[in-house]
Image 1: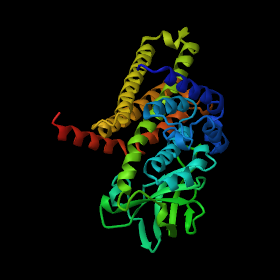
Image 2 (image 1 turned 90 degrees about the vertical axis):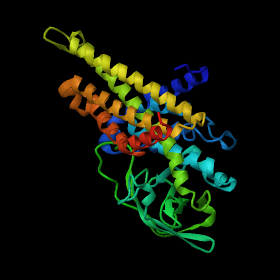
Image 3 (image 1 turned 135 degrees about the vertical axis):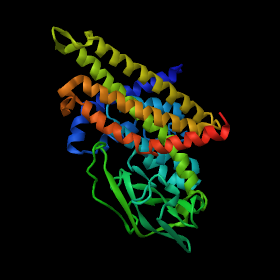
Length: 379
């Protein structure tokens, strides 16, 4: 990867923030299920609340290449909180790209500062991978829409002030879906209990419940029936972001394993003197390098709007999240019983990275996207 001076500076800034503000607290946040909003706002003060939003309204105006550098660096400190930050940034970018001038002015300034936080609402209790089959309804009544339905597994729900909700305003299939910007205080909007999860405990995850929620037609994001396209556009970017979070978590796990194997002694020598340990570390480092290069290739394709960008984003998401989880899991094994203890931080990384193979489209769906692409192209 040949980074510009600006890209080096951006990555260093994010790494410094992670070292000083995330890493020292990550285990406590996980154990106490604490959502550190004040830390997110400190990140936003550095421009990290609107990484890909245009500069005319106060965004950082950066590309996806810079975004993956930032998320990778931040996730070395805490993949869970960085994962939420990537979702918030996806919400901001969708409003920036598809919103009217009035919507940009109304919603983005407080999202950029993270005075308000954002959540993305696509998945439903009975509708995950088959997103085009969603059941939530939006019925137009004059100059308002009335929304009913439920969204599931929503990051930030209950804490966020702004929700982008996909609902069916027309007939069946993808073309019947529209997107809506819904404020938290909209009558009829409520939230389920905070889910008890394997990982990602430094951010809340709740159901979003819509019961006759009335929103102005002016809150529709994009044209009628454009919601699925907007949702998928957000997911391509989100797949890069979550892959970067996996990469950062795996890098942190590898560094912890390297330090431990240098210090820990067994049978009269340090663990890193054993050839089996050396081979394991070598494989982990090689796989991490390969994952980073594929992620960078996909981010470049996204920024260049290459025809294959969707396929490459799916490749990167599938390969990087699988590879990073395996690296973190092997790092835990190298620490033995200590790796299983919360104080060492690796078991948290393993738990946090596991969900990355599921969200933003499961890795099985990534394989479908990739297969359709290569079969259509005849490669």
